[in-house]
Length: 205
Image (cartoon, rainbow, N blue to C red; front, side):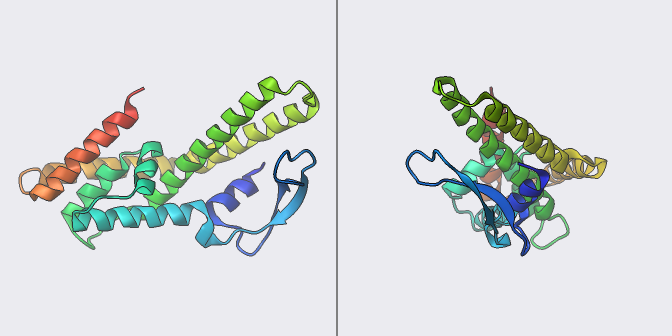
């Protein structure tokens, strides 16, 4: 658990290796040990999220449905991802309104946060029934989880530039949406309406 691991999960190991726990056997995993792991950039989270965003853009332009993986990404994104992509696709194909790299960075960290929270939740439920747990090791693990959260938070909002980038995307989207409201094709209008519904559902507690 470290910022190095976070970077590896998001971007790959770039020819390097990182240490991860590996189970001694698949069933109970009572004696895990460290092993070296490498992760190709093509299998890392951010490039895969970028591919999902590109898939959504292509679906919007072709007026076709997006897949389940894309829908799941929309549920964890902290920005109105589908709305931004819909407005930008409607505004102009290939014009300089494409913020996919920034969106992929934001959404990939959001996704890793969601995965981490699920892991912590499952582990917490297991700990509550594990009578023979080693308290020192549990404390170490919890400390490592806190470190990973900090590393993710640093990646997401360490610089004012990233926050500004998010706001610029949203502000530019709102401006373009207003420009398009009177001239948008029926299919694009339907996609934008659907994006609003998705965003409203994701913001509802």
